[in-house]
Image (cartoon, rainbow, N blue to C red):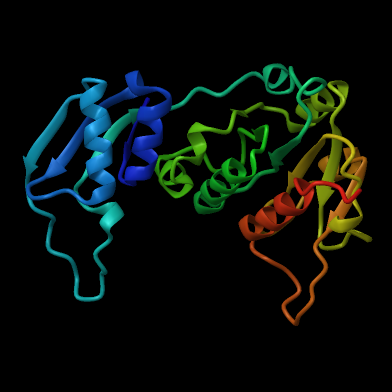
Amino acid sequence: MSLILKNPHSVLAALQTRPTDVVDIRLPAGKPSPAWADVIALAKEHEVPIRTNLAEEPRRGANEPKSERTGLAQATVRERNGLLIEELFANAASDPGLWLALDCLQDPHNVGAIFRTASFFGIKGIVMTRDRSAPLTATVYDVAAGGLEYVPFGEPTNLARAMNVAKSAGVWLLGSSEHAEIDVSAVPRDRSWLLILGNEELGLRRLSLDKCDQVCKLTARGVVPSLNVSVAAGVLMAELTRAATP
């Protein structure tokens, strides 16, 4: 299946990692933005078809802002294939680190933001639930701004089984919940973790929570007691990938 991507950073990352999956680039008349110019240069190197002189952007409403990322410039890119869960954790013993599991996240913007942050922090892989979750649409790819090209992922039908596979590979299971007793700063960083993030409204499912070796929270320092899941994920990733103090 192919997707229509409108973020030049998403398209550029696809060209850098799997150029044969970029079907074509479509551009409006006129000089492209610097970001799209980079896309065009790399597309030419890989002989990706480039179509120009498309119709001008349709008239926008008075309150609809113009977005450089969502104009007529776009690319047709095939979906990236996920891995089997066994493949996702195959090198856990020799290449330790942090993995993520998204337990029924439903907002594609949250999923895309988490992929982008995961790419920034060098996350080893992301497990996503196939049912009751946001699919990997063009919106996810564009919000991820290239992050989805660099983080391995798997979409099992059963998250509980994926957690078992991770544990068998030597990865510890860490839940996140605002009701947890310990702060993330107290989580040991001398081991690999699979951090499980729950649904935007309901949090972790009971089965996922019960399988965790440990559950942590972010302790509020101000009045607002909680964070959006993608923001919380970023803070947790920053803390859990920080080198342990000697």
